[in-house]
Length: 378
Ligand SMILES: Cc1cc2nc3c(=O)[nH]c(=O)nc-3n(C[C@H](O)[C@H](O)[C@H](O)COP(=O)(O)OP(=O)(O)OC[C@H]3O[C@@H](n4cnc5c(N)ncnc54)[C@H](O)[C@@H]3O)c2cc1C
Image (cartoon, rainbow, N blue to C red):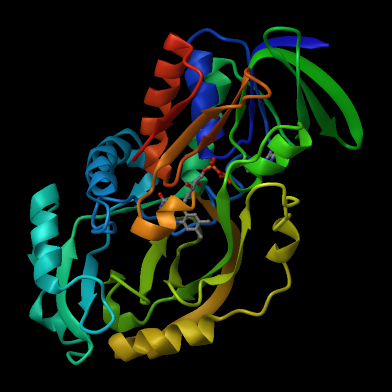
């Protein structure tokens, strides 16, 4: 049996960053990922927006944390972000939870740059449905470049990476530490360690429940983002319509395309992990679904008629997982929780790519104080 300081389960951006952090502290770390590559799931199949605060007018705390983390992320990962496009936020006239003047005031309060969009851009929108259009500062990340970068950094820091390897369960090792059962190519083997980080995102509760630990209340959605060629009239701009049942169109740099997502049509179905209900595995839902691109594009065209010219290429399917609180106030809290049943196992959930910095700070504090549980919010 191999003995390690830490086993990090899940090689998405969170698991990779946290493994790198522990490796940098001189620990012997094994990072375990069930897919054939790092950053192959939610860290790849997402909207690629580096949030700069604009998106969360209903949660000032999330907006302020986003502002700080935006600067940090886009600086640290300057080689993995695309800043080459203009980004317009339009505010809906009807059904929006915010008016254009409230949005301006909110951006002023959080210190987020906001200017009126050029007249030629405003003209593209339907004036009966859109209150106002603003130009903002918000870039996109390239998940493929991010994957290459974290793989390089992990190799330098001496973290061992096991791909195509699934953590099946965690068991207690005496009074401290844990034994993790891993499976590769149908064979099971065990590793011992002092600390387990459960960074498996949509499968956090799968690992907990299979380890006879209590699940964390979570909401999951099967999501579709259409990958499109944008209409030429938009000149490569990103568009986000706030704040209600509207759409967003963002560059998706890792495929040289754009994503089109819609609050009403992107979630195909949803379910909750709670109490004693068996954990539902959403992964089989990811294949063979019918796209809702036509619904997304035709609704988007009511606000931005040029969207009729959007061309469908493909879809990104992923299980999106959030804490139930996010549903009420649209906040994006982070979670860092030590398991009562397995004190050596800490479960991590970050709601946005850049909130990894908040998770790292909270983890450092937790490891330094050895407190029983930490919950922080971003
Ligand atoms: C549709 C959608 C749109 C989004 N848009 C944005 C956005 O625009 N901006 C933003 O900042 N964030 C966005 N997010 C959120 C962002 O993608 C996530 O916060 C982030 O990617 C989570 O990273 P992670 O490493 O925790 O998860 P993942 O990247 O999913 O990593 C978890 C990894 O664990 C692996 N795994 C699971 N179980 C096991 C196991 N038992 N053993 C071994 N490996 C296992 C999985 O294969 C996976 O690779 C979006 C998410 C979705 C789904």
